[in-house]
Amino acid sequence: MIVLGLSGLPNSQPHHLRSRPGIAEVDSRICQGMDSAACLVVDGNIVAAAAEERFTGDKATGAFPEKAIAYCLDHAGITGDDVDLIAHGFNYDRFRRFFHRTPEYFDEVLSGRTVVEELARTGWKNPGDRFRPVDHHVAHAASAYHLSGYEDALSVVSDGMGETVALTVHRFTRGRMEELYSQGIDSSLGILYSILTRYLGYTFNSDEYKVMGLSAYGDPRRYAEFFARFMGADEGRAAVGWPQGALGRAGEGYPDALAFLEESLGVAPREPGAEVPDEYADIAAAFQARFSEVLTDLVRHWLRHTGQDSLCLSGGTFLNCLANQSISELPEVSRMFVPPAAGDDGTAMGAALHVAGGFSGTFSAYTGPGYGADDVRSALKAFERPGGGSPVWEYHGFTDEYMDLAARDLAEDRVVAWFAGRMEFGPRALGNRSILALPNGDDIKGRLNAIVKMREGFRPFAPAILDSDYEEVFEGRALSPSRYMLSTARTRPERIPSIRGAVHVDGTARVQIVTKEDNEVFWRLLHKVKEHTGLGCVINTSFNVKNQPIIASPDLALEALERMSLGRLYIEGFRVGLGG
Image 1 (cartoon, rainbow, N blue to C red):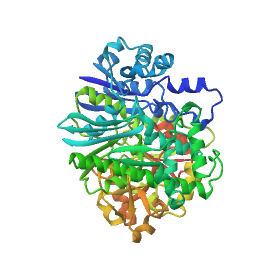
Image 2: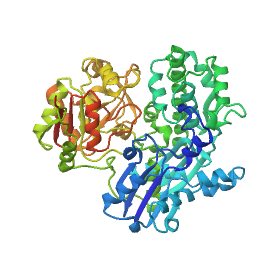
Image 3: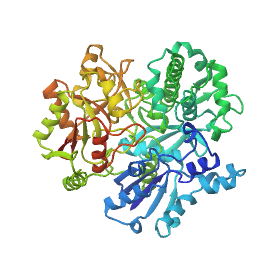
Image 4: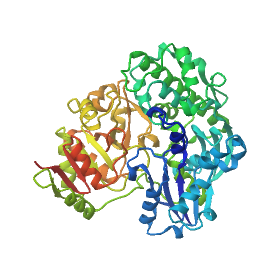
């Protein structure tokens, strides 16, 4: 059976922007259905998956994933006529009665018909007959459970909202799914985090990771008492003390919620782009600390309630690496899995697997487009510039010499781009579309932030480290979220100097543990780095610039080489620089 999975609500953001002309950029994503993606499952195996943003350049777009679908079908060598079922990671039609006051909005934005119409517009025949909507949280849960490889597990899903819920708990027993608990959106932890993000002057439903990074610079004690009263967990239920009506006027930027926070904290919402005084860092620190406590308490309750020790987590809330670290340290947890695409892009995969009846393959995070030597040569030729500035390149293939050249560049403190194999699925670069640097390089954080990434100086960089070197450098359990850069770990104090550029100010690092099983090419490179430096570790940050998606193709990689101050591009066996 062939199942195409989709995520996103294609009319959601256009409707939001059209109905509020002049809306501020920071409020432009206060809508559902962003992060559209496509995933193709054939006979229980994931053949291809990618987010639409990687093909359009519009970061986190919720547009109909036409290009992502085309990639999936082309990679499999099939057409839309060959697809048996189309699974969608939303099922609002089941909840139409809740939207009786806004029928026009429901029909234009939320109904599954909007996706069916887009499929028909792009040439699909009889898409409605094959369309299978999946409850949003079921799609999230399926993406975590089926990819985990666990037979029995507890699943917790937390996000902004999915249809009418923001928190669900399921128990999986040999593939059978049983709902244990669900909670509505009034105490949504995901919405709360996004509102706090907006309060701190960052973009709602986009910049939450900036709040996580900023939190390390603050003192949580200053505002700890307020957040302890305001949010908590009670017997497996999230509790957020919004006053009545605070979550109204969402499309206008939640002004009542922002006013409540201003009154409660005694600090006005930060203007986007303004300086970040200490009080905002202190607010971020207090909030992040309490957020991690609440999520950990929630999960602990359900682990004890079920007696389960295998844990699957999904939903945008569980992209929070600090919270995931806290959860992973629970003694009740023996195994823990968070999919690399834990946000809404992952519901394309989860919906497809749910409709397909499960997953029969071995999971890999590398499901996007891949390119060969001929593709790179064509891109190099197209990039030639009369009069100078053309790429200077040599081809080695993925030989030991090629790995050694890259390792030498890194050991000599050059920043390089690394492009190899199929693109990662999810928001993290996991060694196939990465910018790499020496973790103890000269002022490496400043160089990367100011010259290469062009982003806020307080944001940390992550280390990728050989699995065999992890315990030498880091404390904490090496559970599977660390294979996908989805959990922080505390750095051993004596090893901080050796990876200082990859350690945040609080002593933690958002680690990617690299195994031969997950990514043999990247694993080989790190072994070569170890030969030159004594440690198989590099800074690994996504191959992109601020506010743009991860680079997908060779032509975009060459454009980035020209725009960014990179020492070298290593791409599919080619070593590339720019001539004079």
